[in-house]
Length: 476
Picture: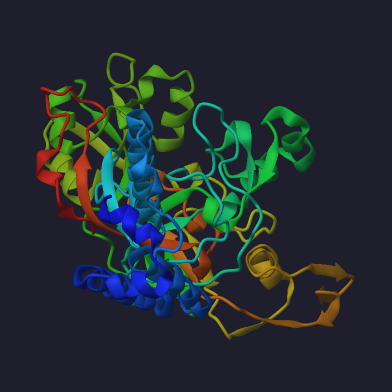
């Protein structure tokens, strides 16, 4: 008879006495790790799990490996695979929630700092990982199951916001991954659009008529992941004047790889692919305005006139870093370079109040700080009602000049969370806090650590598809 079968016939005391040194060492290591994890997440009820660990390694009351004794080879093989897959899924699930998460850069809002096609390893430990709001979910999915296109998580149970102890707080200039704050409400046929901006443009009735599909609500941890640079900290007053960011009245250095949109008029020749590659401008950003019917109107607004032949020279709309701008300005074949006018920008936050702010001239705006109190006047209600209602879970109503929060009349509000102001380095091609407002602390996911892969969507495998120089670089 095998030793494993003999062990199953022993009593609990005998099994404990028969446990080998190796078993006790494994039990001790796993228990220490488990206890440290329990202390980290400050949930001491989980210490009950030590009894389970003790049984797995020492007492073996539950026949954990009974399937290994089966005489059916097929059953043993299936069970082996199932055991390995379940262990891997659990391990990845825990790592994904508490330590690291993979992320892909889908848009150009941070170019040239981070490029479309960069694959990032996002560090969750630095700021402290969040305990998930929706813990029951299909592993390795965000909010939608692929193929079947159904919700991948359960709304029950729903846990309140809790962040574990991290190594540091968010700092200015950090590149931050966060859940899209305005992604609480989503029109399923327009998931790449800000629902609240859609409503501001087209009206609530039109957006909710089914034109953009079913409108759904998503909890914080199931909202789309965005990545931007933190420029405004809690308690700061931020203002943008002619594309220059000011914090508390002091100009903030612009990131060295920041981009702005320019109208570039040549002396008659068109850009070549080689020139675009030198400037690191992707094909989706190579916009030749002459090809569009409304180009004449745009040229009139920009003060671009026809040449001696009665035609317009080629005019491109291009995102340029300062170095690329200076290079073109020195080029003899470039006739003029004009920055994209402020009036050509998108709607700015808040949508429902006439601040007069624009993309390039925004604010001043105070960024909410935990514990700070504001007076609830007309402007502050426009700026902060979303924080009060959507992010901090209150009800807010107004009856004449009286404001009610949770049914109680008040003329002030004290914030529960810290908030941040995020902007993309690609300043004219970034829908950021100028468009949809503040990022609450409970939406912060982590910070990119390294770029572990980078693929250029415009290149083939043998023509620079893999950006080898970017591999395993720090993401900053």
